[in-house]
Image (cartoon, rainbow, N blue to C red; front, side, top):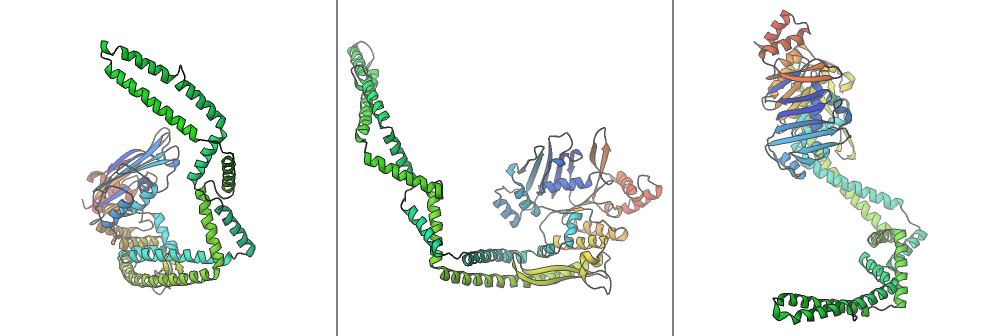
Length: 549
């Protein structure tokens, strides 16, 4: 459940901290006071796109932090394992929106991405807004809504199917490419000439580097000779390092009996002979090296060929060999084109049949789910005073796609004798709100989500219908945390906790604030919702009746 929410410098909220409880909580206030801004802030924690426009005027950044108490379940464990998040019974989500246009996200104080929020938060919180209700008008969304109902029966099959469907698409693309890319004899000859050209210079990047170093030495042979001569003069002439050090050792040895010079003498002695060893090593390396005119020319030719290949096929020998494999594959495909096409056609048909078989099983399960879904929705609609309404799910078979072979439409008749039609063709705004609320109620009963946000889902309804929607939210809050934004007193009066959002106009800005109402102030707020700013005694009495106080 959502335990607390902290918002700073977000739109018209300067600073706000809200502690939430279990049960049903309502947020009320006049239009534009900032009720939906709280939902927008929660939407940011769920991975919605950030914008500099969300930062309050004159602020450097907006900060939103939500603390959630969570019930650990296998799905949540799998998600957290994918995201490398240490799962605990409390989850802290922090998002900062910077005026540079960037945002930073932390999950349990570890840096995270917006994609991680989108993957994780649907298992924590569900936000149902008027915008989501519009999904009912999009036919392509209907199949997702049905699949949310008893999704456990479908998820494993859908995952298996998706693997097969991707394999089918890959083979289809390969086959199409093979058929379209028929090569001529001239193209084959050109590819074979490229292959031979690369094979003539079959060196690794390490070998090329050795050749370059060897050539570099040969190109600087005069400089090497000059340096060695100078080195030998300074190391081994009559006035060189070794001669002077040898003389110094002799001088030190003559006074060995007159002081404790033994250890220093031995150290310098070792240094002297180590220098002789290093000198001889340098000279051995030099004497082994001989300038070979033939080798010099050979290295130049090799590196010329290598550089020519790099300009044509890639900047490294590794990339050139990768290109060689591509050429070799193309040549092989040309020589065995018919055979490969036959293999791909067989593979395509085989994967199509496997995918189709699984898609039919998914279809059969969807049909079963649809029957139960229709019954549950029908029952919910009756309880929402749409007892004449008929809700049906229509199936159409399609070609294989990433969801199977089903195209699904939600059809409804809201009046007796009326033909079934798409929701947006016959249902009114209030009916759409009730239908979506019914769908949401049914789906949520199968979800492990602990927190549900309803943002003005009672739009377009009033009176006894509003009361019934409120009662259903209250019933849902017996096993899930429900937070509801509403303008209707019939809904607000049923909540266990009641916050009011207010806005105050200051000199150059508007500031929103929130207050948890006690019983007395709650009566006043409900009365205001009933009668407007001018609260009448009748409104107070009605508010008390609604609140049973």
